[in-house]
Every structure is written in C-alpha cells, then in structure tokens.
Picture 1: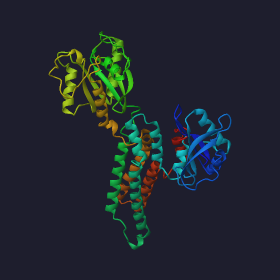
Picture 2 (picture 1 turned 180 degrees about the vertical axis):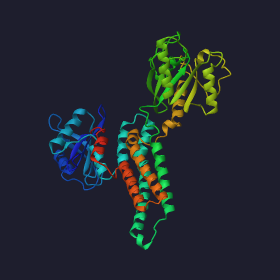
Picture 3 (picture 1 turned 30 degrees about the vertical axis):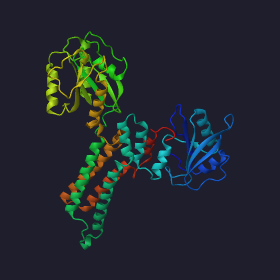
Length: 459
C-alpha cells in the first residue's frame, strides 16, 4: 500500500524523442521543493498558476527554461499540492529534473501512484481509475472511446444511481422495523418487491453489456476464407501493404494461418489469411483445414473471398450467400462481407454479384481502400464495438455484480415467502456491499495494489 504522506515525483511523458516532456510532483513538500530548484521563485502563488521560470539542473546542464503548472493546494487531481514541470523533451534533461526533485526530498513514485491518490482523494472512483489505464493503453479509436466513456462515468454513474436507490429502500425498510410495534409501514411489500426486481434486472443488463467482449483479447479478428487460389494471400498483402504471405499461381501455398494487424477506418483489426477450403486426405492439409475452421469460428468478421473469374458460386459459397441474405449479412451470428477478387481479370461481372459485394484487385489496388473502410464500418456497428467498459474492469466486476444480483434475488424470494423483513434488509446490505466494491466505495488493499500495479510510473 502506498504512503500518502510522502511527496512523490516521476517522469509523466512517454519515453522517446519529443519536443516537450513532463516531470510530475505531488505531495505536502511540493512547493518547498520547487522553490529550492527554481532560483527565481521567491514566492509561490496560492492558487493554480502557470509559472515560466528557469530551473537549476546542476552541472553540466545548468539552468534550463521551463513552464510549471502549479496547483498549490488540495484542489487538484491528487488532492495534494501538485505540479507539472514542462521541459525540452530530451531524456537527459528530464532525468536531471527528476533527480533534482528526488535530491530535495521527493521519492520516486510507484506505478499508478498519482492515480491512486486521485482515487483516495475522491476525485475518481475505481472504475474511472481503471479507465485512466484504458486511455493510456488504447490502440485504436474504438478502445479509446470505450475508455473515455468509462472515465466520464459511463459505468459508475448508473451503478451509483442503483446503489442510491437501494440505500433508500433499505432506509425505508429499517425505519419500518424501528416502528414495528406502532404498525407504521414506510414502504409496502409490493413496492419493495417491485423495486428490488427492477434494480436486479438493471444490474444484470449492465453485467451483460460489461462482459460482451470480455472473452476477446486484442483487436477484432477478420478472417479471410475462400477456395485455394481465390486470391486471399494477395489480398492480405494488399491490405497490409507488405509481402507477408506467399503468392503463387499454384493452389495451396497457404497452410499456416498468416496474420497482420492493420488500420481499418480508425480501428485496429487483426486480419488472418487461412488455407483454401478443400477436401483432402493429406495429413498436413487436414491440419491446415482445422486451423482455418478454428479461425473461422473465432472470427469477429468473415471475409468470403470469391474469384470473380469462376463460372458459378460453389455450394458452400451459395449457402453462405443465402444465409447472409436471410440474416443481414451474418453467418452463425457473426457479420460477413463478400469480397470479389481478381477484378482486373474479369471484364463482365457474374450475375451472382450484387451491390453489397466489395470488388477488389490486389494487382491494381482497386477496391482495397473501400474494403478497409467497409471492414471498419461493419465492426463498428456490430456487437464487437458495443461494450462500454474496458476488459480489465469487466473481469474484476463480473463476479461481484453476480453476487449483487444473487442477493437481490434472495431478497425477493424472502419477501415472497414472508420470512421477515430483517432477512430482506440483510440481503440488501450484501448487495450494497457488492456494488460498492465495483465502484470503490468498499475496497481492500489487495484490490488496489492489483489494479494500480498495472499502471506505468508517472501516471
């Protein structure tokens, strides 16, 4: 557990070359330490200020111009006096500034300690603190938007509202218990039962939304499926802009799954090329078919690649096309796109191609940009993009919210069986405790250590 009485410091900007860098400091000794390393700071403002001043970094760097953003009281992110020192982004300068802060009484911050202090000061709840890490780790617009929604209270807001409603129900229930001999009823059994059921259903809905993408790790998977020599390997090369798959007129050159993460309309996706679909007695080819089938089953989006020069759709292609027409371009519950390949070799389009197909030529790059855009659009509007919580929050909270819904279901059953309002109150307290553990109203040191140890130093 972190020591909150210390003054902590760390480099807050990411490593690597940059025009500017940031060194952060927070704690009771912040203003004293700043006066020590800033020769021109005779007095420190008593309210939030921006100070342009040289800071003394010692030999061989000497004085370096800096801009200090200062919060000299508790009205800041960490709830303690804090400052950010903005300097030229060269690593030796940032390291020297940090060393000066440490030499004059600060200690090196632990991973996540600044955000931990914000949580303990009540500036963030636990789900919002986790969202800070989600913003830092976001690798595309979708995951960034998810983290920002959670940071703005997209999860904690509804849960805190439900917790307030449960507290009100418990207050009415316990008030009735205090006046049981006077036969005063603050809430009817029917009202109590109805409200408990409603809150239970709302928590179940939040849990379902929270865990909709929990099983997935990394970017959405886009899987290329087609016959041997349908142009899948050329297509993944064109999509990635690199020669990552072997291309040959000889069918069956792809056996292992070849994959690459690419940007599709602002969304990072993992595109996977699989072996061509065929019946085979060869043991190696059979294993390649199994790998392709497994990728097919795990796909978030299926690209059905069809050679436009073939005379007709094959049975499996026709089956998927019919299924897609009946279910909004979905196969076995997952979205799919039909991609016509080798457009440069086809002068007249076959009659089985419709307006929803994406026509491509890996040789001329025709349709490649459009395919990337369609992939991004299809994934953004599918269930893949619907989760409103970052995955680490979903993993932590799933079991706890399940305990809350179980407690509420037990409370409802106690009311039906008329076993006594004391037992109903006990179940409501258990549900309140569970919801509190999600948002951080109730927490333990090991939970905080586990969450904040995942942060980088300086955040």
